[in-house]
Image (cartoon, rainbow, N blue to C red):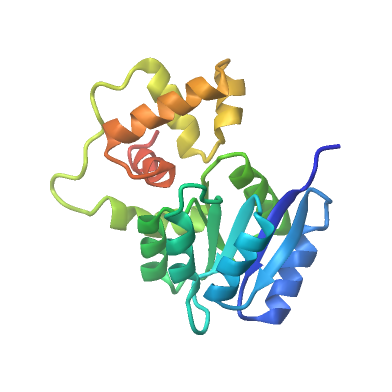
Length: 213
C-alpha cells in the first residue's frame, strides 16, 4: 500500500479545519501532517513538515493565506498548493491564479471530490472546481472583440496533451492515456505553456477550456 499524501491545512476556523481533516483522512489515502490558523503559521508548518500538498484559505487574520502562498509558490522547491474559497471571493481567486496556485476548491466540495483533488495535486495535476472555472474564464480571457486565439501551430500530440491538461489530468495520467513517458509529457506541457503564453498549467487549462479543448 502506498504512503498517504501528506497535507498541510490552513484556515482560521478551527472547526472547519477539524471537519476538513476528518474528510481528508477518511479513506486513508491522505494524512494531514500540519495545521495553521494564519499565514506565518502556514509557512512554518510547510517548512517543518515538507508536505506533498498545501490547502489554504485565502482570508486569514494577520498574514493572509494568499500572502503566505505567494511566498511558498515563489520558492524553487514549491509544494503544489490549492486555495479553499467561496463564491464571493473572485478577486482573491484571480490573484491566486497570478501567483501560481495549482488548485481552486470550494469549501463545500463533496468529500470524494476533495480527496481526489488532493491526490491529483500531489500527482502534478491542476484542480479546477467547475463552479469556479466559469467565473475565472472571463478574467483570463476578457470579453473583447479579439480574445486570445488558439495557436494554429499546435501538433496533434500537443492538442491531445492540452485536452487532458484542460481536464486537470496529471502528467503521469496523461502519459498512461497517451502511451508516453512522464518526462516526455513534461516536455509537451512546457512547450504548450510557451505557445499558449501561459504562466502555469492552470492558466493553460483555463485557456483550453475557453476554446472548448
